[in-house]
Structures are given as C-alpha cells and as structure tokens.
Image 1 (cartoon, rainbow, N blue to C red):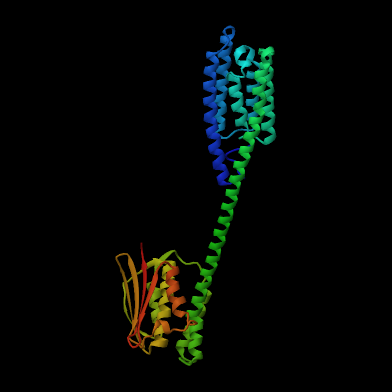
Image 2 (image 1 turned 90 degrees about the vertical axis):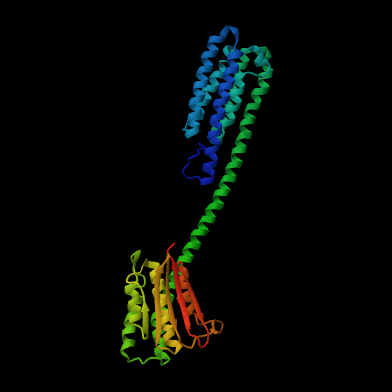
Length: 381
C-alpha cells in the first residue's frame, strides 16, 4: 500500500503522498458527482429508476472512498473499489444507452478511467495492475451485453484503460524516486550537521580543558621553572593545590545560574597582586558565562603579575543596562599586540576565545609604557 503516513518514509515522501492523496480524494468525489449527473440525464427511459438508485449508491461509495483516501487509505480499499466499479460496469445494460456504448462514451467509462488511474497512488504495483484489469474486463463485458453489435467503440476505449493505469504507475514511481532522493540528501545533510555539532562540542571541550590547564598548572609550573617564584614559597604550594582542584573538578556539573562574586573574590584573593576592587555585592550570571569570566580574569591577573612589572592592578565590575563588564587594568610596561609571538596563546585562548565561546567578548588595549586594560563584556540580551 502506498500511504501518506508510512512510518519508514522520509518527510518529503510523506508530504508528497499526503498532498497527492488529498487531491485525488477531492477529484474522485467531483468526478463521481459529475458522472452521476450525466448518468441520470442520459439514463435509458426504461430503466431510469434503476439508474438513479445505482448512481446514488455509487456516489455514496465514492464519498466514503474519498474520505478514506483523504485520511490514509486502509488495506483493501482498492479491491473494494474495484468490486464496486466492476458491478457498475456489469450493470451498463440498465444504466447506459446503447448509443453511448457504441460511441465509447457514458458516465461509467468516465468513472472507471479515473478510478484505475487513482488506484496506482495507494496500491502496490501488482495490486494496481490487477484491479485495473478486473475493472476493465467488467466494463467490456457489460458493454458487450448492452450492445453486442456495436461493441467495437467500447472495446477501443476500454482497452486504453489499463494503459492509463500503467502510465499513472510510471508517474507515481518517478515522483517517489525523486522524493526519496530528496529525503536521502536531507538525511545526509542532517548527519553531516550532527557530526559537525559533535566535533564542535569536542573542540569546545578541548579548548576549555586546555585553557584551564594553561591558567592553572601550566602557568604555575612555568613561573617556578623560570624562577619568577620560589618553589618553596607558601603561595606556590597553595596555588598548586588550587590548580589540582580546578583540574579535577573541571568536568563536574555546575548550576545553570549563580552568583559569581564569591568565585571572583577567590580569584583575586589567591593571586599574587594587590587588587583595587570595585564591584556589586552580587553578580548573577549563567554558569558558562561565569566560568568564562572567572577564567579570563585569572589569566589577566596572571599576565599582570608576570609581565607588567607591577604588583598592583584594579578590577572594576559593573552590571548596568543589560551589560556586564569586568575591567582589569594595570599601569605597567604594556606591550604591542603585533609583537606577541604566535606561540604565546594565553591571551587568545584563555581570554578572547573563552569569552567568545560563552557569547561575550574581550577587548585588550595596551601600548608600551602605558599599561594594559582588559575589558570582559557580556550582554544579558
């Protein structure tokens, strides 16, 4: 059965079949009504009552057939319709004038021709062909009973009916092949989109992990290795413990929303700088944004301690007009952005990229002898 709601079909194919079956349902009912009116108007004078009764029954069946076709054709619908059409084909001696049979015209052949074409849209190929042959054979037999001497005209038209069914089947097949090709392309595109999302998620996780590693253990070990701090200093031991904690809890689940001020105070309080802080009492942010801000703040303060030549910095936090801003400034030696070696990825990875991944932005302003300002921003939207 060809059905508009077949569970294994793709979206394009389902939409195509649903639209086609609804169009066919309306067309079948319209043809039945028009053919019925023509049949009543041309009914043999000796059998007008029988003709009216048969046409009313056929029209009622066509309405029921159209209703099923509109929703979703049940199994066996084409066989039931073929039985009805075969019956009206055999009833032609009572419903069709002899002259109409001789001319290959009449309301019966009109309904039969349309019906066998429509069957191809909701049946398997074998079923559609067999029902077309059954209906055609019944029509030809009824036409012969009606006018044996003038049967040639009806035979010519009736013989064309199976050809119409075959052409309809070819059209259905081509349309379904096109729809399935479109569904296959859409499936490949969706698979590619999913793979890209997974790959991006993996890359984002790697960036977060690398940034966390850079901000914690790598930075601490580098400072010790370069002799910037002594390995026996209490600050180094405490910082090593904090680094280990940060790495272990890096993948732990976090609340979706929370106050980042405790974390901000912890970053400032555990650093090596004297920080002049201006901030509100609370700063509620989404967890991803808060994590990015705190990580970027830690990296910015580490850079001040390592590169500026200053032991003091200022941190200003504002939350006004739907925009959160954290500004880290120092009056140290400053630098030229274009002179930073390509292998130095701290600012790019741990500050700029980190804020961008969370939907914010970071702007670094610096010049030799004029200090450095790092501005972290995020719009609440």
